[in-house]
Length: 116
Length: 121
Image 1 (cartoon, helix red, strand yellow):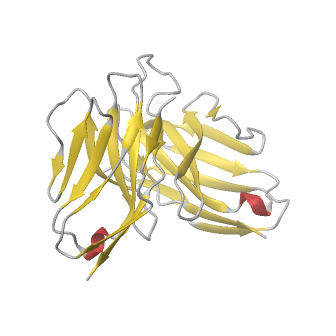
Image 2 (cartoon, one colour; image 1 turned 180 degrees about the vertical axis):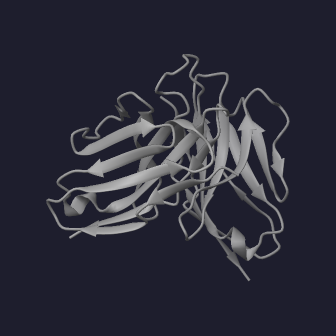
């Protein structure tokens, strides 16, 4: 089946620094990738939709200058948390849609970000 | 905007028994997709089952089946012969296809709040 990887799986950074999270589709091409944020025992909250070769579309209330998204190729999207603060600590999940399948999304294993 | 409601924050079931998780949604669309996802302690999201709204027949995947009531906007998940490995958080999700090719709203999933299911030995 389709596989999506995320790197790193866990990251700890100091307040004020930036951290980049990668999302890769390993065996398919993804024209669209999605970034979610999840707090413990809560639902997934969509942050932004990333389309290859174009600007990401952010959900209401998500700061685009703080959460930079780049989708430079059909297999890679990155999320950069800039000037991270402790309140940005969370579990970040990406998903990717196979360009050949209109409705299926494949999820990455997630990245746990801790900002100290 | 679409909303998805899961009214059961937590459920528990004995191994080998059957459990039903509830989900209701609100939409004015006629064509859409509904999903149940499982998130075990590893936190990897796993697709359990998918239902196309235009299909009247309820989807079934081995021990997992749905009761899709389109008029009532209800989409419950039944797990038969529950196993310890079914212990997880379950999310109901809604997807509205975007008729505009390349539209950024295409494929957006709206998730319910989730139900934590515990299977007891």
